[in-house]
Image 1 (spheres, rainbow, N blue to C red):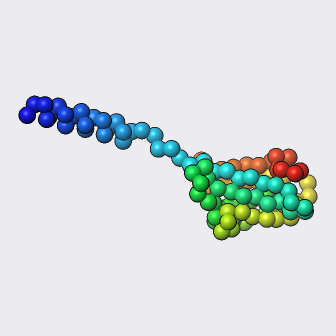
Image 2 (cartoon, one colour):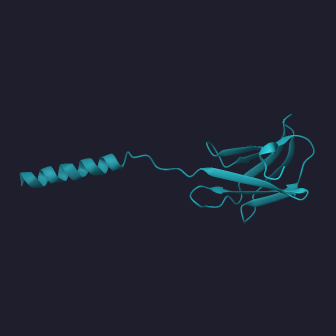
Image 3 (cartoon, one colour):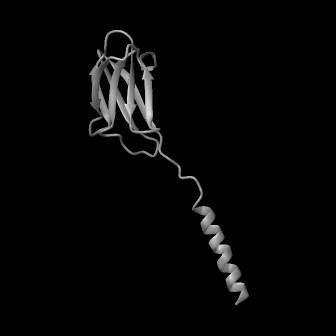
Length: 108
């Protein structure tokens, strides 16, 4: 009987320590490239899930919003290349923000 109790406490200890392990969060990503006169951005998460409906803004360095939209059903967006300097902000919520400065866009 004493061995069963000891076994029970060991199993309980193991499972309670597993409950405190960190949960691996999925990180957002956004990749943008120049295609002709348009910029195409593709968003998603590191776990392979899509980012459809996630907010994406194109903003000047003076903080003027040039474009405010959401990623489509394929987690992408296409828009004309803005004049001047700008950055792209994908906001999937607290701790899930991606910023891309215009020089980081493939093809520019």
